[in-house]
Image 1: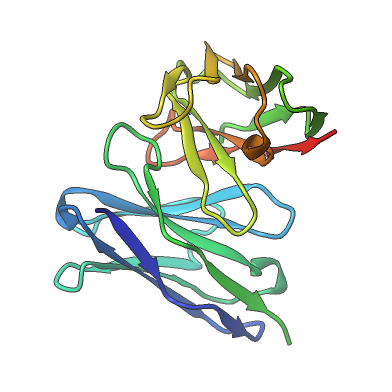
Image 2 (image 1 turned 180 degrees about the vertical axis):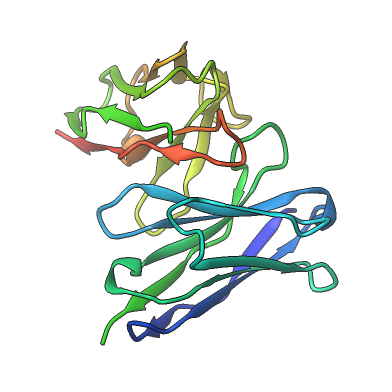
Length: 118
Length: 108
């Protein structure tokens, strides 16, 4: 059974960084990529970026380019999303997502609440 | 970037009603569109992919249609568990994707 298990909620101060993990199981980690999506309160889902589980190649949304870094640890079967220079507008639930067939998110992590407050 | 606009933004309906939600893309995206159902505290659930294909395990009362720039999600007979927010997603430039702003379906 495919599972994506994310790290727990965090509270950060403006200007800090946060790193969220997504531990994967139940499929061939190196054969598929993992996406990161966030949803701020009252806002639409927003795609942030993607990492190839095999070679670590990344593609980022222009909006987050320069502030987001997505990495993966093949041995730990875990992907990470680090967002820097946090501001209050980054308060959101962050999800990792998996595309196993076609181009659509078949599986999602449970979500991680990140709150940015002074 | 391709923008998706959904309408209506919210909708009140009764159990048994037929409802239709529309998603319009800012440029043609062929059939590279999905619909998700999202309930509070839950993760989004894939309902429809490639504009009109029903995801395995999703009830047949859900259907999708459209191509190019205009797409619809139809629920033929609303059930109590269908009250949620619905999002469209385009993947024409995969792995980039964008989502619509959502349509909140509420009980009348």
